[in-house]
Each structure stands twice: as C-alpha cells, then as structure tokens.
Length: 340
Image (cartoon, rainbow, N blue to C red; front, side, top):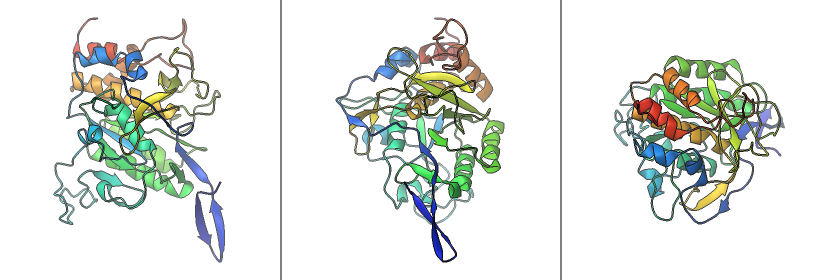
C-alpha cells in the first residue's frame, strides 16, 4: 500500500498516496484499427476540415511519454527558444535545456528523465494525437503538438508532498504556450491552495484545463476535476451508457469514450484500457481540433463550442453526462463556420 517514505526524526513514517492516474487496471494488448472512440465522437468528420495544427500545443501532465514511438515522435513539442544540450537556460524560463518539456518528478529536462516511466502518460498522449499508421492506434488530433510535462511517479501515483510540483507543472505548461492542459489524474481529498491558484492562473492566461470525474462509480466528482476552472469528463461505453466505473455529478462538463479505449503503450504496442483518464484526452483532442479550425477563438469560446455541439445522451440535462457526448465533427464545423 505504501508508495513513499518520509523521514521524521529517527523513525520512518509511511506517506500514503494522495492520488494518481485515473485508470481502472492494466492494459490489454490487441490488434489495431481505427479506435471505436474516434468513430463515436465523429473524429473522421472533423478530419475533413482539420487534423490539427502544429501551432496548437496540448500539455500532458502525467507520468511521462515514450517518444521512441514514431507515431508520437511526430507530434512532439519542441521549445523553439531553447538550444539543446548547452547547459544554459536560453529562454530564461527557469528550466535549463527544456527542449522537449520538463520532468517534474526527476527535476530534469523531459528527455533526460532518470526513473522508469509508467505506461499511463504514453497511453493518454496516443489518444490525443497519435499519428495514424498501419498497425497502430490513432489519436483525435494527429497533427497538433504534445508537450511532455511529467508529474506522476513510476507507479502512476503522487503523494501529499508533491502538490507544489503539480502547481509548478501547470504553470510551466501555461508559460510555455500550451492552449490545452490534459490532467488525467485524481486527488484523494481537496488539494491545497497552491494547486487551485495554479489552475486559476491557467484560466487567466487562456489555457483550457481538462480533467476527469474519477473512477469511484458514485455521484461525486474528484479533484481537480471538481474545480470550476477544470472541464471534467465522465466516461461512456460503446453503447453511450455511463461506464460502470465512472463517477459523475454537477461538475461534469461533458462525457467521452472511456471504456476499453484503444491507444499506445511504451514501446509502441497497441492495447485497450478503461478509465475516466481516457475520456479526458478525447475532450482535449476535440478542443485541439476546434482551436486548429479557428485559432482566433478564445479559451472561453472554444469551450462554449465544445459544450454547445456535444450530443445529448438524455432528453433532459443529466449530471452523468454534462452537455453530452463530445462531438468533434460538429465542434470543428461550428468553429470553422461550416454548417452541417
């Protein structure tokens, strides 16, 4: 049960996990085809207008990403103001040689991480922007750029001593140009003010933060998805029903596929897994397509389009689904001013 230890005087005290990745179990390896979730949110219709712009940056604050996978390497964000390997903070942002993002777990540039990656971050990144090629899984917005901001440890967890790291990771993503931040993680309890302040900072700078409802199968959205500055996603299955594990509540903004979702594991293998963690990147990818179709949109306008174009799943408003099932085809059409 213990994930870390904290020295306290002469005794060692256990430090219990404060939260982690919002997955429900271990991934299952499969063959590859166009993932059902992309079909369900009408991503192919959106791709007739845009597959995403390299100018739209989505930060994945997670457990790190395996960039040896060609389908992800093609969408890797590069810091244009940093010179690789010169040991100098060229852009003056406080992070030396952060050419490809920053690892807040090991406190090193993302490409120089020292500890093993958990698979969760790679899986999330693949859902957002994996390039479609034979034998692999595709992402919602396969031409945007993914900023790697590692926060979770090698077990996909974090502890109460990590709150400052999370706040710093959010601020890093905002300050380095992320228009969308994907937070597929949950907290056990209410985070401290430093996290709420970082999320408020993101909102004030025009970054959209997408979070998760949680996997507790009850009417309570977990933090940070519970904050008003976060768009929380619940998870649906292939029948458009609420996934059996998904939490819900009035803080849910939209629903998205989260049951047996197809994506990539470290090393490039294709697998399925379930969790609200994997609903959120469908939302982040759709927002990325909306902003790609119309880069002039503000964060508020893009979020409004996302909600207005979602497909209702019930005749009346329902806290299980928020505005409904995210619909990339309609969202992109609305953003581009194209009637469908």
